[in-house]
Image 1 (tube, rainbow over the protein chains, first blue to last red):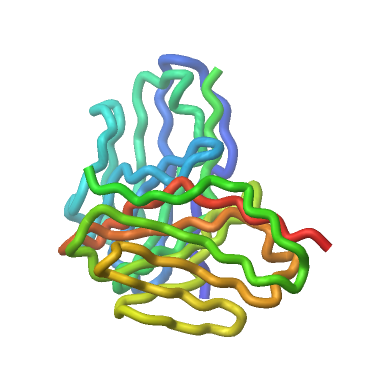
Image 2 (cartoon, rainbow over the protein chains, first blue to last red; image 1 turned 45 degrees about the vertical axis):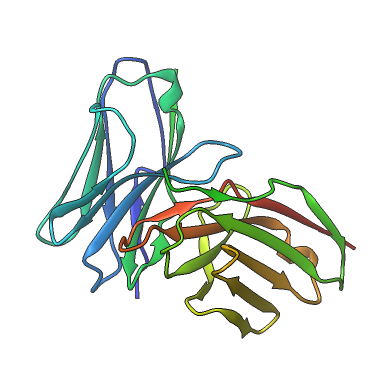
Length: 110
Length: 111
């Protein structure tokens, strides 16, 4: 079975640009979560979706948005990028509270 | 803000020793507790989950939970250099399916 897949794996943007990250969960998983991880820190929660409904939102500005599609895949959008948005963005699908992470999308903002 | 605290380390142990990793959490009603392993440059990988007080063993790994003390630990027996990684503790707040992660403890197992 395929695990969680994320795209793109690496990307470079400049300040003020917008970025869209994509995630496909493990087959049968209906919940997708997004986390941001900067070097030396644990993952910080951004969003969780379940059955296309937002179930939770972390302490991130409105520049961050997400959605989940009928096939349970998900997109994370970040507008007006700042240097501080440079990080590893992790998507996880979950079953019974256990998270299964994709390989992440490493975003560099210049 | 519910918190999960871990010593960032690094914790250095010789090959073959027992590595002990600790985590405290602030939400008294949390019911599930998870340990993830993250190799440098990779994403976190679930290695243990524990829901009841006491010990849970899986191979060389043992998770220990004490809800009264709000403390969860991970023991790694017969540590190997391949165990060198950052270990993340994750705890959902009571009633939530959304885990809060600690900052992780870096473990170095030297030959």
